[in-house]
Length: 268
Image (cartoon, rainbow, N blue to C red; front, side, top):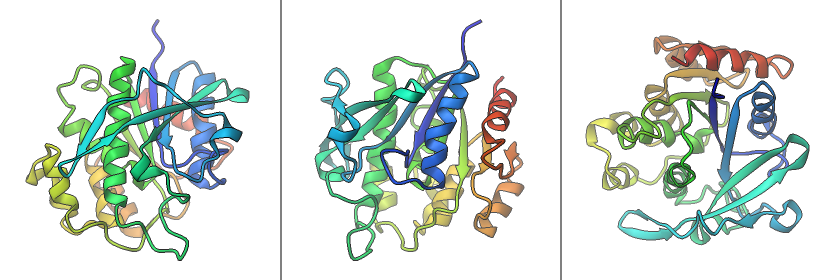
């Protein structure tokens, strides 16, 4: 019997970024799922604060070289990879000099969110899916972690819905307490329409903030997980009312086995 394939798309993974709730799950979950007999691929952004030498990142030339067009501007896609030897697990990094070379994740030193976080999230989502196509790897489950991954379900369900690599994939979105306080760029919706999405697909994000972006991800997912013990009450209610299979919060002792069972339940 062929192994089921799980694509993990994570905003953060330790040891590449400091340990957080998302980073810890991003590190431990893929290893645990692999040890339970499934095949995995794992992606994260190559934020500029990641030490490439210490973590032995190197560019994958055969996967790099494509340009992604965002808001009518070309942005070169660079793919890097590193291995977590103890987990026998590779991590693919989505990189671009303009978006990911700065020495911070989402905010500058004074604590102000980067004005182009919307484009960075678009580039990351598109970059992951284009790279998976180049790998010719067909995921059964795509599991997204962190608001920075929230466009992936939308792209799969709307733009890549007829792509044979993704058409059978089930989308799972974990809702975390990773709220950002500002709104994304006012032209965010326009940039997504330029990318091939339709006005009707984007009604939820008339106001492009964390709550609405998370609702958009929930709307386009097949299964939902409360990844934090305390998530925004509005989002918890929205998840409960979605009518979709969902898991309540699971602690570090039980989440791997519970998630693995949830994947099997979601799969046809």
